[in-house]
Picture 1 (tube, rainbow, N blue to C red):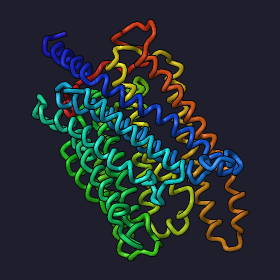
Picture 2 (picture 1 turned 180 degrees about the vertical axis):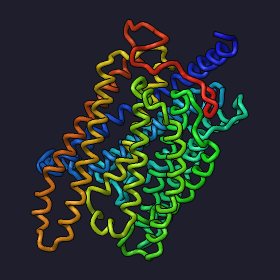
Picture 3 (picture 1 turned 30 degrees about the horizontal axis):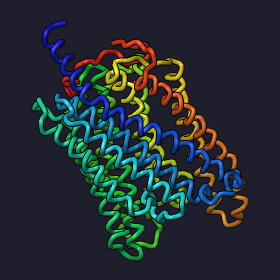
Picture 4 (picture 1 turned 90 degrees about the vertical axis):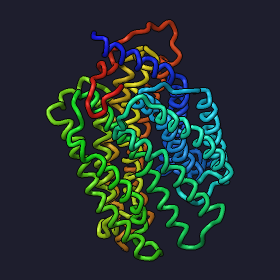
Length: 482
C-alpha cells in the first residue's frame, strides 16, 4: 500500500473515530423509534380490518394511534437516521473530524425528548388536525432548538473542511438542512402561533407535508445515492456536469408542487393547478438524475450482488422513481378523480419515506456502522432476514395497494355501491397491509439485534473485513474522498 493511500486511510479512521459516538447515539435512537413506530403502525393497520383491536382504551383508538405511529416514524426514525448519516457523511466529504461531539449528545436528548412529549400528547388526545403536525405546539420550540444545535455542527464541519471540492451529496445535505427549519417554522407560525383562517389552513398543511417529503427526505436519500454509487462501483457519476441543474430544478419545482394534493378541494383553482404544473416540470430534474444514476450503473450491475449497501441503494433508486410516477399520476386530474381519498395517497408518501429514504438509510448504515465500530455484523442470517423482509414487503405492498387503490376509487365513484360494502371489499387489502407491516417489523427487529451486536459487543472480535460487510472503499473522481 503506497504512502498516499495509507495516509488517506489513517484520515478516514480518525474521522470515523470522531463521529462514532454521536452517530451511534442518533442511529440507536432512530432504530428504537423504528421499532416503536412500526409496532404502533401495525396496530393501527390491524384496526382497519379488525375494529375491536385495542378499542377499549382511548389512548389506543385508531384516531390517536395512527397519527402517533406516523409521527414516531417520521420524526423519530426518519429525522434521527438522517442526522446520523448526514453528520458522518459531511465529516467524510469535508475530510475533517467532527469537533466537540458532546454537544451533539445534548441535541439528541433534546430532540428525542421533544418527540416523546409530542407522542404522549397525541395519544393523550391533545393532537391537532393537521397531518404531520399533530404533536402539540408546545414541543415545537424544543425541536427547533435541538435541530439548530445539530445544524450548527454540520455547518461548522463543512466550514473547516480540508478539501476544496464540494460534492453533489453535500449540496443535497445542505439543502435539506436549511429547508426543514424553514418549512417547520413557517407551518407552526401560520397554523398555531398566528393562525391563518379558512381555506389557507389546508394549503399551508399541504405545502408542509409535500415539502417535508420532497425537500427533506428525498434530498437525504439522493445524498446517499450520489455518494455510494460511484464509491462502491469505482467509477465517477455519469454526466456529472448536469447534476447542479438537477439539484436546482428539483428544489424549485418541489417548493411549488404541494398544491397538487388539493385537487378538487375548496381552494382557489390556481393553487392545485400550480402544483400540477410544478410536478410536471420536475420531470426535467428526475430525467437528469436518471442520467446520472443509470449512467453510473451501466455495465456495473453485477457489483450489486457483492454489496449489501448497493442492494439497498438500488431499492432506494427504484423507490425514488416510483414515487415520482405516483406524484405525477396523482397530480393528473383524470387519475385524481379516481385515486383521491384512497390508499394510493398513503402509498405515494410511503414510497418516498420508506422505499426511497429508509432503504437508503439502511444501505448507508450497513456501510458506516462497521467502519465506526471496527466490528463485523454478528449474524449474517439477520442481515439476510432484514434485506429479504424489506424487499418482499416493498413488492407486496406496492403491487397490492396499487391495485386496491384503483379498485377502491372506482367503487367510491359508483353511487350504487354502499359505503359499508366498500369497506367490506377493502378488508382483504387492509389485512395484506397489516401482514406486510408485520413482516417489515420482523426485519427491523433483526436489524436492531445486529446493531446491538456492533454497538454493545460481548466478547466480540474486532476485524477489518467482515463477511457481510461491504468491500473496501473504492476511490471515485466524482465523490472522491472517504
